[in-house]
Length: 238
Image 1 (cartoon, one colour):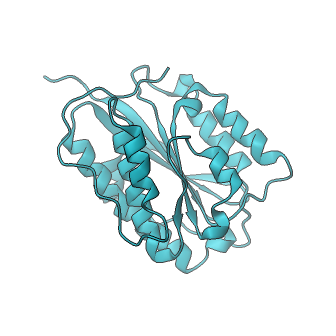
Image 2 (cartoon, helix red, strand yellow; image 1 turned 120 degrees about the vertical axis):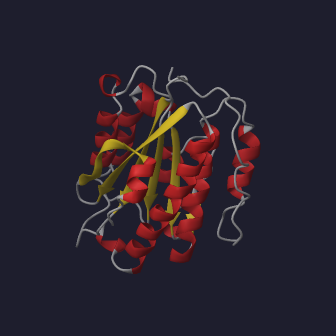
Image 3 (cartoon, helix red, strand yellow; image 1 turned 30 degrees about the horizontal axis):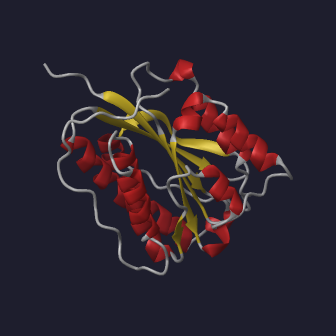
């Protein structure tokens, strides 16, 4: 038999606060469903990584919508829509701590690749002063949180804030969806980044430039990642 694939953990942090009610929530669910087939295709086209996905819905408190790591193909077939929390706030501190707990060394396989974290939100954090920094610090104190590819999708220009810039990995911009119709494009762009940035040898500056093209002033989606991957190396955890 062939070499066993190595786990690549992908955690989606989805804002389900009260401000996401209605059209935004519908668009977010559609966007997440649209992203999954792209990840399924990428996983099929390469031989080294098994993509395992979890979804954390957060508002006043976080709740795991998909609590255990599941294969992305399974989630694509068994998708259940997220729901907004009436009057829910955008508290990111407990969400960051929940993700940090999921990424402690005892809960990751020794052969796991560097994980990816995607934060999707439409607003500024509503945590008490200084809370956002302490919550983010708890995530970055974990080796896997520090080395993870951290992506942020801002729904509306108000969400393209300094906190998201502090969360994201330095090599990737905040992706802004200026309207609900753009959320799916941004999440597909994020899925390309998750797949490409996991590989050693990819030109990260060129990919970052590609992601920069996916801003609201450009309605076109960046060019998709090329077809089948050669069985190259992937980024290890430190």
